Length: 130
Image 1 (cartoon, one colour):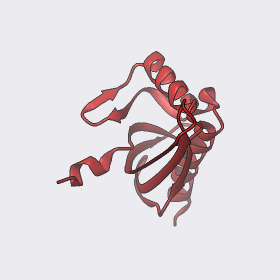
Image 2: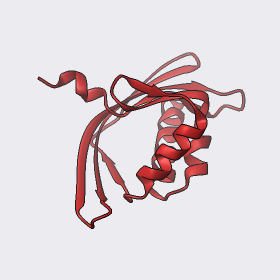
Image 3: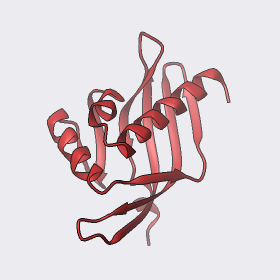
């Protein structure tokens, strides 16, 4: 991996870590203002208050993510991150929750050299469903 690919991947890993730890401020700092997150296929959200509320609600399930690989492509100041994921959490009734998906994210390199998410679709695998 090139340094740019590693830096973009690090941004995704930092967001995931913040989310798993319930650090919603850290999650939000991983995104550019007006970033779009697709929690539900076909329904992107780019309002910061709505995103914060969605992440906070989802953090209540104490999600733990694993990725089975990462594909990162960089073209100038834009990066594409693709990764299959598995999540295990706990519902309000104490039942285990298990989900899987395909994350497809676009990141942009910032003036300070860091990378931030611009578009984040953790449900990219819905297109593969029968």
